[in-house]
Length: 330
Image 1 (tube, rainbow, N blue to C red):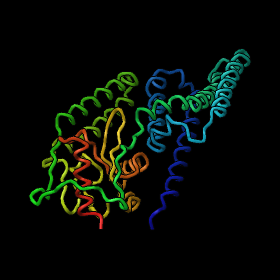
Image 2: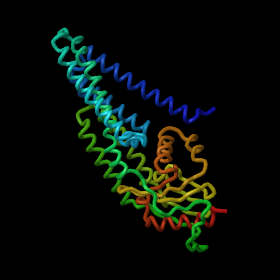
Image 3: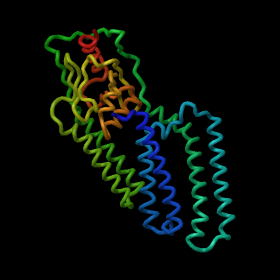
Image 4: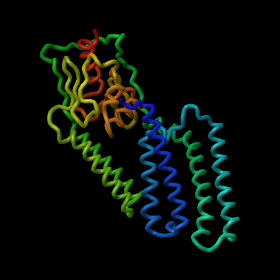
């Protein structure tokens, strides 16, 4: 019997909290044992653990929750969180001043001083970060939040189809290899810059970035090395080459809406589909996470980047709308 999505999400949330607790306990133990004063711990282990926690948090909650405040988050709550942060930092400084000369000169004394002070300092950072999302959320929304173009085709409203001749029942659109390769090179450049800043001297972080680079090359390599057109439109449905989309085939009878969503950085074609939750539940691993992320951000798991295809996005929209109006709406 499959586990409901809500129960699975709660279980993942508990595992994430458990990871936070283990990291906190590990920090206290490291201070007590004196590892915190050793180079191998401060330059290798600690940065890698922090980066791994940030990574799994973003995977679980999504980049939007990391940089955007919830809709219910008000400026008044932001002021309260900033006040908590300032109070935490004041208490941290006070604790260090009050205990610095009253603890034994050994690892236990260091743990007494820095254990609570680090906890207070991190709590202050968390509260300040919560408040800062009011600012970062606006910037993030302007740059990364996809916005729908005015034209939308729905089941109840038939589009005015473009003329489609008998010889044009199959439309093939090729991949724009130049644009895809340029996007891959830009991604690798940003990835390399992040590695250079965050962990070029850290073995663990370098290993994490190396694994991420291999995964990035794998995702893009399927599209660049593959054969055939990037997108095929037929009377039965629409097909996408692997690497261009997570859903490679969609019948017109399963299509519900047609939209173009874009940001200042990218543009994509989004086709709403029936039984999206069933499709997500049948997937696993990265594909399941990516499908869920697409559904939350774009409203559908089925999308394809228009910049990776050799066509005008508006012409692509009109062609797909014409086929859907002819073959998909009964």
